[in-house]
Image (cartoon, rainbow, N blue to C red; front, side):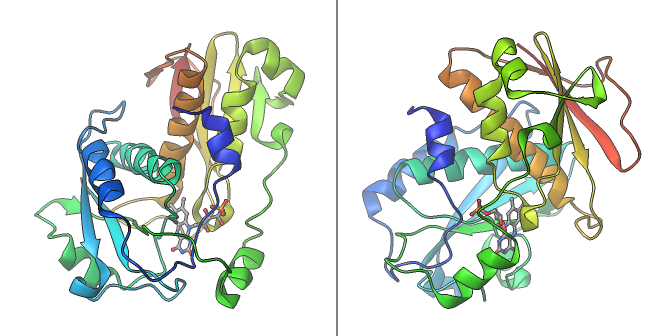
Length: 271
Ligand SMILES: Cc1cc2nc3c(=O)[nH]c(=O)nc-3n(C[C@H](O)[C@H](O)[C@H](O)COP(=O)(O)O)c2cc1C
């Protein structure tokens, strides 16, 4: 794999496509990759590859969209984190193969996508993504959408990452000493619903504790888009550490600083 952080730096959500089906060899490679994706929760995520014309699929924020992938998971404990982790692993590989993608969790006719994904009892399909070649020019609606959510900016390092407890920001220099600077940068640059960046991390020697900072309006009875965002962040953390030859181990219910109001503990990585 290329340096994962470099892949993060040159990724963006793509909402304007060339109107053509993706190359069949690339799709075959992506489908084969998808069949092997696992996540640290051991929860299976099923991917469904769909021709947009055949299934009459579209999204009001996209143009030139011709092909989709949806992701389906059983509604079980930690299905949100598992979903975010596994789907992001697939979408980052699609990006590596030259395809444009964008997480879509809201702006779609959900019933059509669910029908095309053939949901079984107990299964949910929180998000989908188009797959295709990025158009030469962004559509006006894409430009406006990016402006609306300030898609090109991220919160600074010291507003997201801490050491000891939430009252001490983690400096970039200290993160470098801890050997997790690039992995946390990969988290910082990750996509998130409405670009809210709900991930917070307390990092100390060989330990990184992940929390979600909740905003209103992201949770449904079946899934929470911001916990899905945390699954995405965890994948980014692990993938960058893997690039550097380190395999962090994910645990739950380890000793960790208490989450302040509005935040929840997600998981701890030891590395
Ligand atoms: C879980 C999730 C759900 C999202 N849902 C939508 C959506 O419904 N419509 C949309 O246009 N973008 C959606 N996005 C894309 C975000 O708006 C985008 O990632 C964010 O603005 C940052 O921009 P970037 O991905 O170009 O860095 C979603 C992203 C995530 C992670």
